[in-house]
Image (cartoon, rainbow, N blue to C red; front, side, top):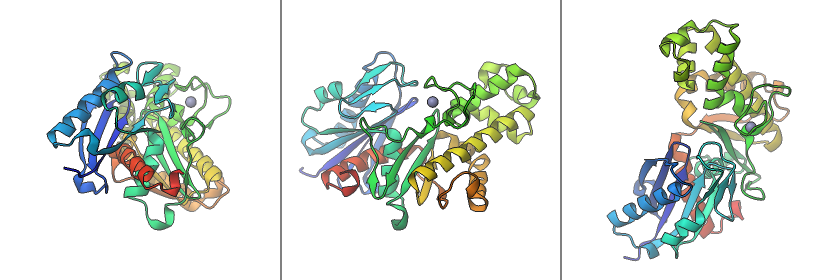
Length: 334
Ligand SMILES: [Zn+2]
């Protein structure tokens, strides 16, 4: 009965995922479940987390005192200490309290918070990275937004509240009129995230300078049905407007990678996130750029560009790894 476990949570704009695993994080022992992110009240997310975690524990006959810690990865920005999300564009409320309501249900278990992009790089560090790339590793998530996590010189970068790698808000186009969810203009996310691709396509349709017949065919002439998925599909079909939008998505991703490598001098960058469904239209072009002519975007030696094999599960794996590293006082997070 005294076998020990670790719990992990990953809160995103679409899904809340919860997992438990034996304390050695043997991936064969990961048990996980997910639920659509509820946005009814600011406590809906915390309630979902408590409900699913309680279910997983009771189904596996695990008592609360067997859980060594709960790692909670969440879409940011995050206040790590307070356990609150603030200013988030996709979770429905300005401030979302997590620590207090979860602590009420699991009072004896230590709870730690981490920005989901930063959790991603921890997950890759523990479950996936090769030895020679672990100390200088970056994760970039291209999804609803663009987020990331950085390990530099063997240390995880956190920042004063836990949002040290909000790389999606790197300014890649000064004087841009493309508005980002954060309120600024010309962010990488405004061009290359799922939201960015959709919004830029809608802007271009309104401008009316490019042919979008093939895109409009896919959405039955209904602009409101356009998401990044349809823009990528139309680009594959040869749609002029969609190809311009995807070219921009890739171009600004090259700019973003260049900035990240110039700042952090990383050995490898792993990509993940929902947009990797269309990775074939992004990743090979980026790899080619940084293999053939990196100096166009970065002064440092270029990183290897890779994809995480854990896809949308890398955040929850990072949440589990956070607790393991806390328990063993791993130098990476000290
Ligand atoms: Zn922004």
